[in-house]
Length: 157
Image 1 (cartoon, rainbow, N blue to C red):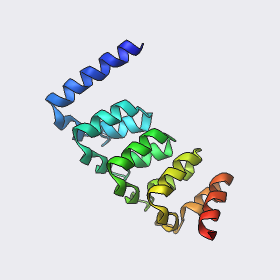
Image 2 (cartoon, rainbow, N blue to C red):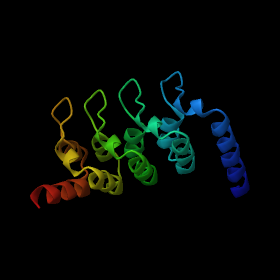
Image 3 (cartoon, rainbow, N blue to C red):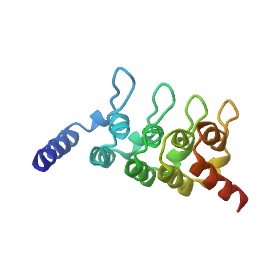
Image 4 (cartoon, one colour):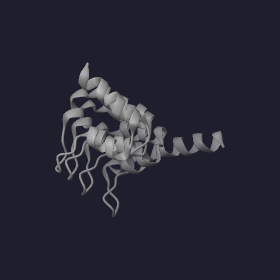
């Protein structure tokens, strides 16, 4: 299985080297390869895509979501870390609902993803979406007690 994955990675490298424009191409649902790989947690593919063109991290879907939004929502910590390293400002991008990746992360189950996003941009804890909901509101409504605890600690200290 490892050999097969290595072979696929090599084929992908050659393909992206020969046709770098593929990384910015969108599907019928307006998703890029980076968005799809991020949603599935395929860190190796995400890395290859970003090596080809880091700017694709900023491509948004029709709903305004980026690859970071979906990786945060799906609890893919390593993908979130890589996307933030390549484009630290991506944590500030808001979707059409006014939600950042932090808003999306609190809907997920990973406090590690929330912590990573807060390390990158701690002030996003106070950003409200279009309905006035800050990440703490969403965490409270979703019953994410550890996230609420972490947020309150940050707000108080």
